[in-house]
Amino acid sequence: GAGVSQSPRYKVAKRGQDVALRCDPISGHVSLFWYQQALGQGPEFLTYFQNEAQLDKSGLPSDRFFAERPEGSVSTLKIQRTQQEDSAVYLCASSLARGGATNEKLFFGSGTQLSVL
Amino acid sequence: AQSVAQPEDQVNVAEGNPLTVKCTYSVSGNPYLFWYVQYPNRGLQFLLKYITGDNLVKGSYGFEAEFNKSQTSFHLKKPSALVSDSALYFCAVRDWRRDDKIIFGKGTRLHILP
Image (spheres, rainbow over the protein chains, first blue to last red):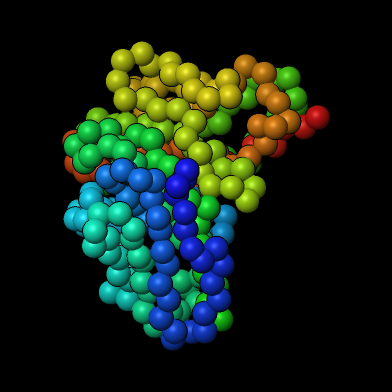
């Protein structure tokens, strides 16, 4: 596609429910990032993939958060047993560059707005 | 660890006046610095970057930013503001010697007053 696509656009979950958020990066993009953006805040780094390898997951807030990119393209961010503090916009971004080079131009999706009730 | 500070939550500028959005950074190594813009109901868009070389970098929509190593700053500027520049602006940094993650500031909302 022409850009980074994220689905669903909106997700309402009951506390304790598991959710899965999908990201379709731009075709051919090697790097893929997940960010969490709370209301009125900047994007907070969650995790980073280079192809299928998860090179950095230091930003994942707890072991309830899990991300995968099994074939080096589509990525899924899974949140188990959702809590109210998980409510945020989850942003996915992709970049053509490989790690070690300049991941300078990130292309962002429109995000998934997660509301946990 | 790298970090970014945007000291102003909001900046108001009259149309036609010059604008500055401030950013300071902290890295242990050499920084890659970026500005992104977020318009309402749209994803973040890349504006410009500093990697190396000339301290003054030019980007999209007439924006520019100046890298100042001694002050660890990377302020975003534009000589003449447009109403359409009103948006949320994010400064970001990557410590290229350490890892690939890009860290964002909390953002500055820019209001251009007609």
